[in-house]
Every structure is written in C-alpha cells, then in structure tokens.
Length: 133
Image 1 (cartoon, rainbow, N blue to C red):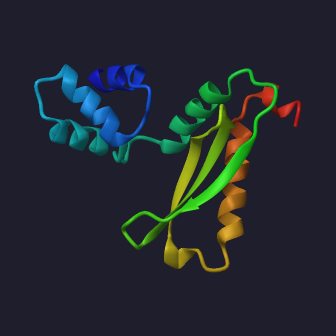
Image 2 (image 1 turned 30 degrees about the horizontal axis):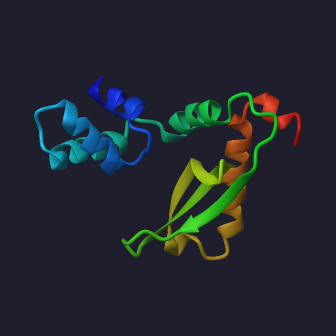
C-alpha cells in the first residue's frame, strides 16, 4: 500500500525516485526503500504487459490523436538493449511500454522487436485515439 502511495504522490516515476519518496513515509533509509521498489518491480509474478496496458490506457485516456516514438537505449550492463515506445506530450516523451532484449538476440531482428512492441501498444491504445489515426 505504501508503494502505491509513493507512486501516486511522486510526479516523476523511476525506481530511485519512488524509493526515496517512499522512504519519507517510512522509518527506513532511502537505500532500503529503493531496494524494495526494485524487488517489487522485478517480481516474476507481476505481468509487466498487463501493467503497461493499464498505464497506456491511463496516459492516452480520451485523446483523439497521439504521437508515439520508438527509442533504443543501451543500459550500462553491456548485455541488453531496451526498446521503449514513448508518448510525445507537452514537449516531453513519456514511456508507455518497453521491452528488454539481449544484444546477441538482436542481430537481424531489430525490426521484428519494433513491430512486436508497436502491435502490442496498438492493441492497448484506447479506441478514441485509434479512430483518428
């Protein structure tokens, strides 16, 4: 319940930001709160596709037109690439959905991963936004 509170009242999302905000409500250090958030997000019983679907519906809402962008990012681990689909709004790019791929699985399959993510997002965008595309 405290994690939900931290997400609802923290304007910028990110594991570290949520953890620090959560630490202000609890009697724990920021380090331990960040660890707790990270473990929760990485929990195998949480279906990220379902969570991202709820997030997409909330972010797009009743918009009649949306502009989405794709972006490949390389985290510091040297092993993975992250493909992110972002909603362009108010001069910002807000992440809607993402997938993490091992670099060795990307060879000649980059477009395939992009297509899969786009199809997943398209299936979750509310009908109001789809009708004007």
